Image 1: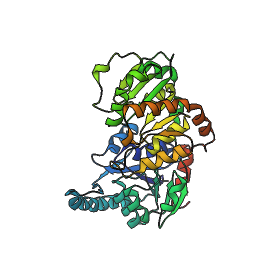
Image 2: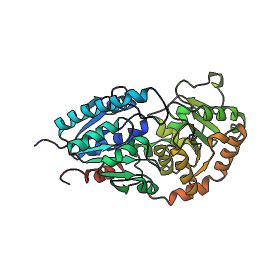
Image 3: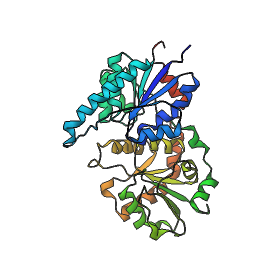
Image 4: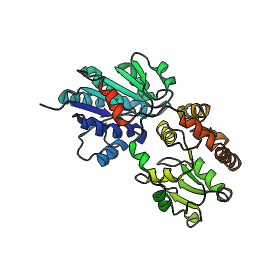
Length: 360
């Protein structure tokens, strides 16, 4: 008997792929033949192929959806149209029991094609308010899973459930000893981990480096500064370790950390919450984003999980003050985190998704 098929989609950023990466193993264990539809040049292609070399990956065209004026706004709709036709062809050929989308621009044509083909479509939204791609796609979905309960009222024309966050199990397997070894630190002082994402954050990098002499008086610093943003003049600075980006060893660096400074993307902050890691969040400003990170950060601050410093207020002095406040309130944050509802496992999330498939 042929295995039932399921199509996953989502891309553009690592956050639009990570949940799919987490649920692929349990879906395969349940006997599903998993296929991925993504763009030709998006980050999702390399992430999926590197993690699951034998998994079928189908390329489609995808235009970017912009909230600002660009000449490409006149041409990209044609790419979306072409992507819908390409996705529809694959869906009719594969005859999947379900399509699951994590969002991002490439998911829109897949969801539209899924509705045209009569295949159940399920969407996952990580942020408090839906991103533009998911906002456009939700009317064509059968069900939407959200991380925040505050997101459910934003879902129109589809049923919605707050399923909570899903955390990769391997994050809990980190080794403090290995993390300290990777960073070349002794472990005799508290460790501050600063993360600005794979592309880095100029604001975070400047704040950390300008305040480094003061920080190093009382703590060691591990700085993930983003690709191309190493400062070689700081090489050899005692108590300071800088990396462009870390993947495999991130769980060990997180285990070695006593506190973290980060942007406020949903996936990351729920990982810090699950690891009971005190955090200082510096969300992307409304000028640089649709404001989703600001809402994420404020909800975490309201719950007692984080300190927040708005990007437009970052100076060397305010940054040092905020790090000091996070350090002083670390135990209070940890106590609040211990009361939080535990995250879903990938197996639990996969089971919820499959309940929406044909025949379930």
